[in-house]
Image (tube, rainbow, N blue to C red):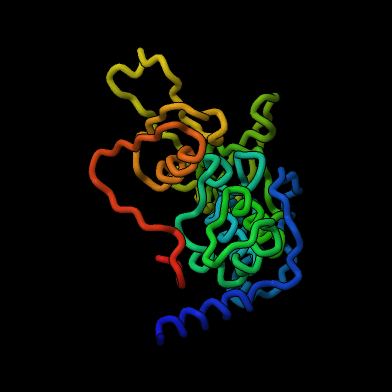
Length: 280
């Protein structure tokens, strides 16, 4: 009873601190101008200006969760920030997440303390179900964009900007990037910064799968799952039993005739939804 009461109190506090004025945000391409350098000489609570001729200029590389939060914190401390994202929008690995996948952790444990995720999702999700809920790819992208917009990060974002060089230039760093969509002519842009934040993550590169006989297999080999409709009444093998593989297998079971999951070693699954509280 005590645990249930504590959980209820935490849930109420978490939802209550969410912004009531959040409107519906669609995940869309961001083409916002970057924030101009802040050389106003004003005071900052966390970064005093004594002995510093100008505010720090920071280049944040990567527009996922870590990059957006880093940019937000730096802006609040008076830094001039430029966030470079190689994709067409913010989102990190969730921008490329496979169809049918959802977050493993519940919304209660995935919220930013200053921007409640449960309160936000309630404003954008059409379906209503029992709490706890787990965000989908599009919901997370919407949430991250709303967070960036709420705290002024969008003003310093440059999308379709792939960093190709970072060089030491005296006491600063020269960053060079290709700007523009991948299928168009690109222009290398160079700019110097006093600090660099590398927030490219660990899961942005795909791991190539290979097995004996794979090149002679007559069926389909799918390395980017978009949904279960094209697998209707088919026999499917899912290689792997991690978070993504488990979501894909569950999604395929709704349309495929048979779904097999193969793994190197036994694993243990927990249901996302529990009767009274999230398993995590």
